[in-house]
Image (cartoon, rainbow over all chains, first blue to last red; front, side, top):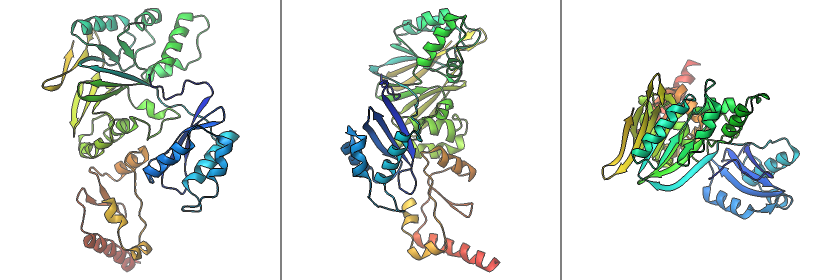
Length: 315
Length: 76
């Protein structure tokens, strides 16, 4: 699992908005006084910026300040000066550490996967989908959120979460519920909250020849540490913002122009709640419909075969 | 298209200010929508969407900038 929110309790991730230099943002981590992951993002010379990041990797913060200061480039500052300012602010507590979305990286090559949208806490529906997906040959079930709802049975949901081929992602509602103060007299609900808080929020996967990514929707962009330059942020920005959850077809040409910058060529999202499939350049975007609609339960079987990608909606 | 704007003669700097929006960012997308643009790349002058997708020859671009500047000068 590739967790962008570093699991090491001593490591803090920072984002710094620059002033007067080409890259608008610098990302870095400080781990017990050691600087790592320096990345100048969004502009400037990417080769030089990558070199600077590589040269600084693993150096003590106290050591790098002397290296970074006193370099002029433009507007009486420079990328190194901006990084020095950022590190100074981080050490002084003026720049606070931030966490972005958590990514579950499924690196197994798949030929069939099941995708599930809004579950609304219906553990019985989820159990039926898992069984049907298994019979249909799906190697994994990706549930993009929301998993939980207020009416749900927390105990039953916790039990289902143990399913080995199930990848559950937190949707906006899950995230909101997870952050509520836990009810002291309801230990099961509190356990579920803790579990939801722990859920990843994005899944990356490989289906046949396609690199894929799945997520719920635009709440991820409101996370404190979300960066427009994070992996898969471009896909999110295009789908959620520019194309308004793929409802605004008039801008598909603009989205297509951005596709070469995508990491994924298959993009799944669930926020809209209805099914839709869109080809934009060589990227396929799928709106995953709600899993539960009245008595109806639906999910999608995505297959890769000789004819390429196929989506079969099952209900 | 961005290159065609960057390569404009320096003397035009006195009559115009160039702002480039990064469409990878939410800020850039918001501005793109405010300007009612649909295609990338696009060139907007004084809030008017003037060029979409097609890259104008530099002479045409310069002429359009100068025409707008002259219009403003005549109006004031």
